[in-house]
Length: 337
View 1 (cartoon, rainbow, N blue to C red):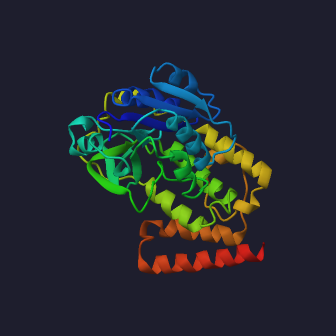
View 2: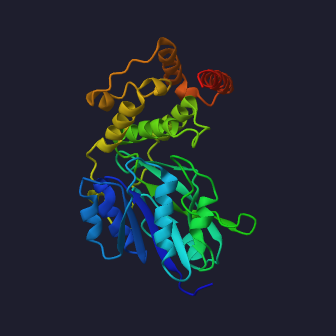
View 3: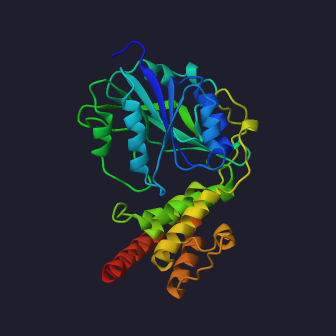
């Protein structure tokens, strides 16, 4: 174990100017290297990244979003940094909270051993920074020694189109998985409801588009998951504070137009019918972009059912109905080849 492991942040970026300056300002307080893989940003994200001396800016040349590919690019760059390193896999809308350095969790990470992998919880923020909730998280950081091939380890863990592990889960039979309870990852992605609606509709489309990479994707499960994530929480009574930056650095405007543009490109390539089961066709920003698809009656009934039952989707009877509907949709997909 190195006495002073290098701290490396790896982050994919596509048009994140609304939050990127705040993110890089905050990360620069505690990270030694910040690796940004930019995917054709045209909103000034690249120019923002180039202003920060700790940033290594690389290109993600893929015109379409495939998460395991961009995270592999990031890990290739991180692997070139010599010695022990603690790699944090953060998105540009994820922050450490103010006072992170005084938590037991941070001290545990800084004193970690090789092949220790750290689970964090997510603190989702909504609207005014005072509505927030703790939700289950995942692996956001891991300590790697120089002998570990982090890229090979990552590639061995499966290839999902949209959501992958942020860091390699090395040597699963040998690694130690450490929960970090007092140091949440502050997530700002849900601050702007229009933007997050477009992002999650985009994720739904990509999940279907990239099958069989995402063969477990179900229009019902996707709706349940993403609609649940963007619900408002109850106020905590205190405002979440970010490490080293104020709320004023976060720009609340913008709808994430690139999500709309990428969905439109997919629909023009594949047609809308393949995505008819997705409950996305009432999205006003899609309609403004010229996508006025009206799905078949059976799918409109499905969508009405999903919306009406979303507040109670955890009820046992609703879960049973959902299970039956997923089975019927799979049978239909198999018949259609």
